Image (cartoon, rainbow, N blue to C red; front, side, top):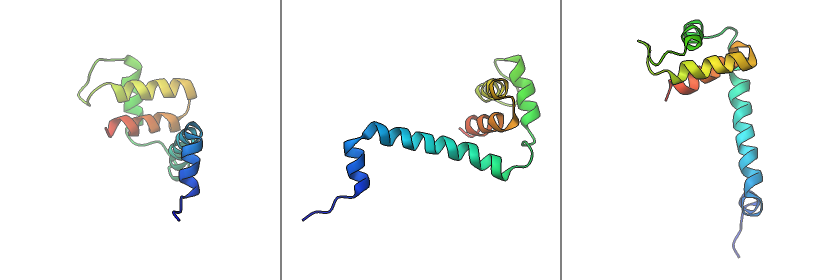
Length: 93
């Protein structure tokens, strides 16, 4: 008799539910860890937001997606945590 894990059965029964649980858990981790472990914004955040406000096509610091995403996140949320998350996410890729 074969044994099937409950997690595998859950994925088979409700794949959309499992997908959204994983997505929300990942988003919570991406938000919680920088909030818990960083007392201040990273050193480049002021530069990133300053370049992001101008919506330049490029700069000496690299492609513009990280700057634009950080500026949009900063304007939507109004805090340094979301902008630093976007900066780390797009700058590392």
